[in-house]
Amino acid sequence: DTGVSQDPRHKITKRGQNVTFRCDPISEHNRLYWYRQTLGQGPEFLTYFQNEAQLEKSRLLSDRFSAERPKGSFSTLEIQRTEQGDSAMYLCASSLSGGNTGELFFGEGSRLTVL
Amino acid sequence: QKEVEQNSGPLSVPEGAIASLNCTYSDRGSQSFFWYRQYSGKSPELIMFIYSNGDKEDGRFTAQLNKASQYVSLLIRDSQPSDSATYLCAVNIGGGNQGGKLIFGQGTELSVKP
Image (cartoon, helix red, strand yellow):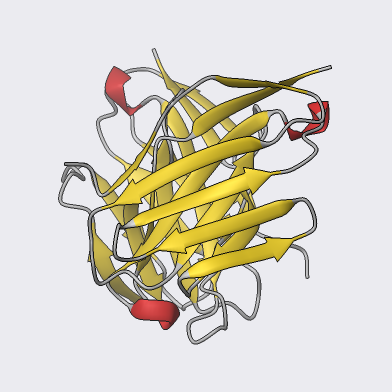
């Protein structure tokens, strides 16, 4: 069990550019979640997948955000035409549906800075 | 009304004291509740989960749940400086114990003074 890994750990970009983050969940976990966290706030839910199906996407999420999990393993989160307000830590987490706790295991996050 | 609410703090307690962290939630259908700890610059890690009304103890930590009042709390006994962190309350929304998503409160920053 290597844990949840995210890449890149840090990304600095200019406003208007596109960025993509990758998440590799714990291998046996079929659920994968994306959260966004800004300083002084708790993680904000963005979207989640069960296997390759995207089950829910936050109503607060702009159309500039898209996530995929094509083969039910790793996932990507793409932000198009970045804005300064997108600057945040993007956290990926995974879990096993039907597991006895519903616990989410988090990666170390990808920090985005939009200049 | 936010789905999960916590006092942001900071909460400051002396070493050896009991720290009490509180959380309220809005969805009466919620069935599972979690406390995560987050050190500065790190990702959240699970401390405790609770499903049933009453108390659940694990070492120095006790989680308390009152579904009628929609209230969850975390007590940390014999607080240590290493407990200084942000504590996040999370509630499973929409799927009972086996599904849905976790919604987090804003977190309470705890500082334990030596």
